[in-house]
Length: 411
Ligand code: PXG
Image 1 (tube, helix red, strand yellow):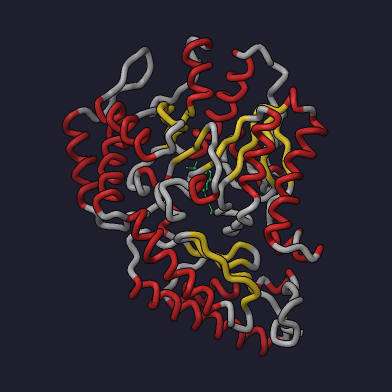
Image 2 (image 1 turned 90 degrees about the horizontal axis):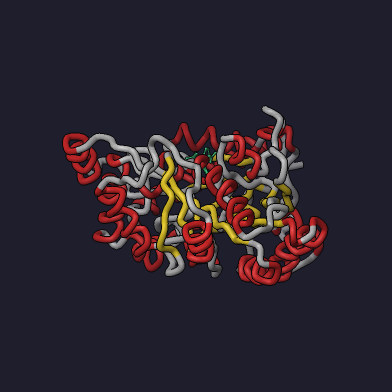
């Protein structure tokens, strides 16, 4: 799992350790308020504008992805206020999305267990269904691509029911991570883009997991074919060696905020922390020098896809999907008798946790999200290591199948 979807350059990278030590000796802290900044923050802003899509030339630093998404909420509302449309404050997001744990982050997220604690969501957040073919498209007999268009149009329906003049932005993860590696059909995001353009709604890509090479391009929006106005990032920016997050602000928003908005009264003590920025610079330097994005795109990403396609033949696996170095196996029952219409396990079985138990005991860290078994290995993984990982996964699937047969869960 790369720690928690973040140790993308792997452990033991001395360049990152050295960068942190050097910066702590030089200038361990200075703030980013009152028109001040530090050299690592300035340099990192420049590098981020190079590696992100061309519309991004500004960055707002935070300490985490959650703070990044709180920044997004205030920033998009501020954008519409400055443009004289203060009623335009609703953000649309999706069920089963994960956008963090702060008040705004957890509200944008679509995790019902989080909403149930602490009086969430905050006002002005509206959730639509996630683009999960297995739950919504397959039961209706749709192809994945047909379903992608249907799922995107849920956004249009919601914009129309709220009133476009009240909708500030739509936010989504290019591929949902914590929700179980939900990879939308290729038709989904371009249609979402068309709908946002049609109604003038800002488009936000939460790249906290997908950013910095995870999907085989620098950012997930490039893999999925859309051009967001704002990007949230964290995790992979420093490979998790120290905390850092932020928001890439596209030209459309930056122009309004900077030229017409005056001061944006927002920021954190640790915004642009010099040590974190120095580590990020070393990390991005390593991603570039080791050509890790190309490594995922051309080599280990396709290799993992092939290996997962083989696992799809396993009697417990109803669906095997990857995107770059994110992968998911959906565990199903009665596939052998019913290959096209296999069904989910009874929820009380907790088949995912049974499989996860075997994985942890056998020495492979594979997560369970419901009945989806997920991985997100470091971008430095080699083909030989993928072989080793997949052999262990297959072994754990066999052990899980044996449990299921013994306990009668397949009936
Ligand atoms: N957006 C996305 C897409 C995330 O995955 C956040 C925002 C929040 O980032 P911070 O840095 O505030 O945690 C995340 C974080 C899980 C899990 O169970 C995933 C995250 C956090 C905790 C657990 O996979 N992702």
